[in-house]
Image 1 (cartoon, rainbow over the protein chains, first blue to last red):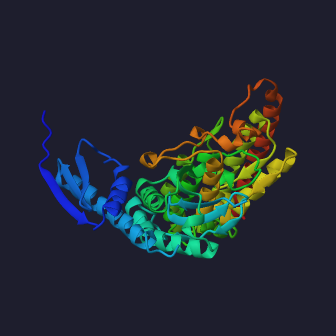
Image 2 (image 1 turned 135 degrees about the horizontal axis):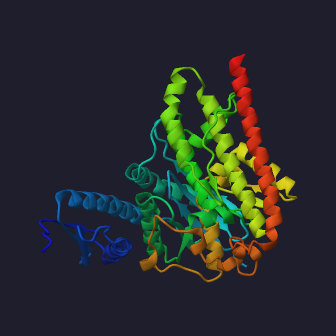
Length: 89
Length: 360
């Protein structure tokens, strides 16, 4: 039986810096999607931009994964803003 | 020589904490923030993670400021790998991965329960760990049934209320060998409390008192049996429940009778905190252990005995959880059996007193 990956979503965040985009990528790539048979996530970095592609078999799985991913993405971005270069050290 | 410094993150449950410690055990800072839910409600993974998201970064700032250190001075970054709730654990893990890359510092993953134990230097290792975790859960659920406040902690409020308890209510006492079961007590309480409270047969204080007496007696019993098996006479209690003064008192009596000592940490270290993670991680780091970024995952289940306590190899602590062949321990077990019977008859006595009180 073929799995139907009917629901998908793409988004891109421009960090304006290849280094920062790679840091975020490396931090977020560690945690795999918890239900790989229901949600897939693909990420890539180019030109200082992080691109994320989600695919899911149902809208609710897509919504859940997307929303928690965005929370964590925001957290890691804020961490760079607060503690990255420019922080008094 | 430069002192070794670790920054530690703890966020496996409803508290998020960041601590800075040095290898000699000095705590330079240890700020923390607790997610407090309304009475009658427990903390859910998603809401707790949201709480952690909001507080983790200000906590790092305050930890560094209080400790008067800069990121350059840090030797390693430690975080709780588990056990705990997934979403809240992820917050610490993600922050630490970013910081590790920004500051070029190694990561050390730490087991939450081992950290509780490690907080007491040269501690005598014995933890009835998972059981007390379960007990904490049991107390929390009980507090929810009674709609007790979650501020500062449900267990604390039960303890305070229990001091006012006058009547002992018989609750299921389930001990099977080395194991205890709290589920019977919970169902029993959940099923009967409302009725009893409505009919004024007992007060919430009585229930708290009876619950504490019963579950702690169960804990003391299995702890004593375990000690007899392992031939240990000292005890260290840790964790949130370990702050309970009544439990400490009961354990202390039992240890004293066996010619041992009770070691209890005060509430600053009993409750989840960042410093305990930092310190445990730093010990591992000092022995050359680090966690590669790709492996800095978190896990809801993480047994204490899965950890190789590399820094403990030369001491006897690493072997404390190994149970000896019973053989010559039978005599001692018999002794415990007698004590248990005494405890039980005491309980029955209390019960009779209650009956009498009612008839008068």
